[in-house]
Image: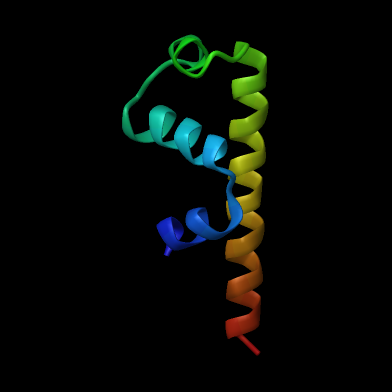
Length: 66
């Protein structure tokens, strides 16, 4: 379910960052270097990605309870 949500609500960059952080266990600095970004931008995109996933999950969950 989460991977389906990721595919629908995240940008390509957000998906890459989330994968690098959560699956590959890369640091913010490593991700920033890999994607040619500043570390604070990586943190912000990851935060937005997590929020988008949470919001979509809650939306699906509330829709299914009706």
